[in-house]
Length: 256
Image (tube, rainbow, N blue to C red; front, top):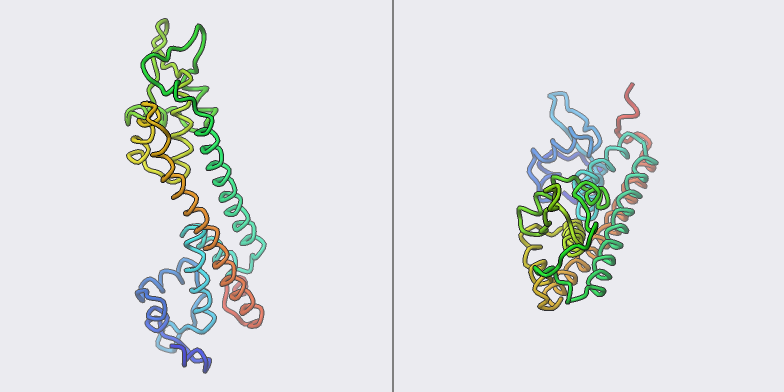
């Protein structure tokens, strides 16, 4: 394929697919989804691609690890219809989410550093008079739905008590802490089954060591995501440059 590209030759779907370890159907799907520019057609209706399509595919595949498939697809669709500012806005939002995830991780680490082992959530923790939070206000505070808190309760991650007067769920200080930790770890990408033993260890006041490995892994994944974003940015910049150098580049904006 490299020799064809160097000669400015045309590429079949299979050529583009083999060069990137994909199936020909995947290449067609990417074109139909707007991730690749529209292909030219031969007199017999067969698709033909160019070096620009190969550059677009490299850019998309490089964007996926850092931004996710859906966001990477949105970026490429915006570029291919010449809505570059829209593509930059999407990228900015993705970077903002990464920054927010870093702040979430920092909040988890701060919460764990400040955790009092004596308040590990054992049966002796009882809300004071008028103390505790009901499910609605707590859900709003965390930015989740009450149904999510009930799901966490069924998984054993959060253990609210019942208000003796109303029978409503009442989240004391320990339950609120467990809910916050669960929420933060879920945002970090951890499954409920992975969170359960961590919450259990915190409750048992057996030390925070079990969380150290999870936090190290979280740090590593955020760093890998940031580095992948850099690689994706480099490939996208190369694609943008090639589109600028090729005023006849296929795209949606040129078709009325």
